[in-house]
Image 1 (cartoon, one colour):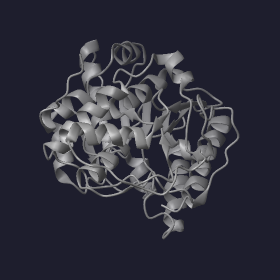
Image 2 (cartoon, helix red, strand yellow):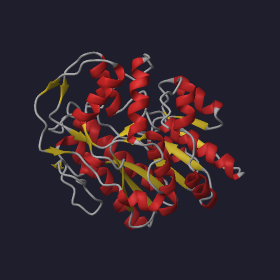
Image 3 (spheres, helix red, strand yellow):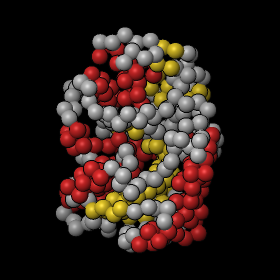
Length: 344
């Protein structure tokens, strides 16, 4: 039976940070402290919290350290309350990077997407220069590096469609091109330094405050026409994506492990919006026609390594409709998943 309610932010945080048995088993075998870089973003706090909870479950004395500028001080306070250490600083500053503690395990979560078309220089600096700094500093660490399924570019929509890890990148726009650049930096330093790396191509993480499903449900609830040009999408519960990322530390390698992170479903936006309309008792209207291509990934490799996601699409749709209907807090940060020209 599907649980149709996540009552509040506290329950949401608890669900997002709940480690799977596979995460607990992995962190029992993968010893040493964990440094989470870019931990102040949308996924970082729950990933650091999950690592802390899994570490406690193993009975170890591991330190989990979150690094960010923490422009929102409440995020840092929450991390500290959960037992996660925090370090404030600017990762663009090489001296600050050099001052970070030597750590056997690093999770790299930094990236610049929204506004990339207006500020391509910052886009490339964030997505390419910062990985270089981190790889040079943590040459002896395992690194799990977040990337994006945007490296593949759109593909024709068809049953079972999805780019796989061996497909050649075909990026569209500055952001996607710089994301390929980010991967190349990790590949280069993994090859030249022998640094074990896992490259994690994500699309799209979702939870109750942020994500493609929140975007679509909000449009339906507010009576706004849903644009269909990007008519199909993949999503994954953020907690499952973070679990895969932590598990990937065990399989970091040189040359890097490359792995897609998304859910198993090819989601038709029109169909899921019809479901939202029914669940929220709202009319729904559409604009435009479904495009022949979409940004889609096949995550069979992750499923084979770490099992399928714990949270199903049906659960996500139920939770999202209920959250939006009740006026649950959202980040008010659209994903812009519907962009088809790569200009974010």
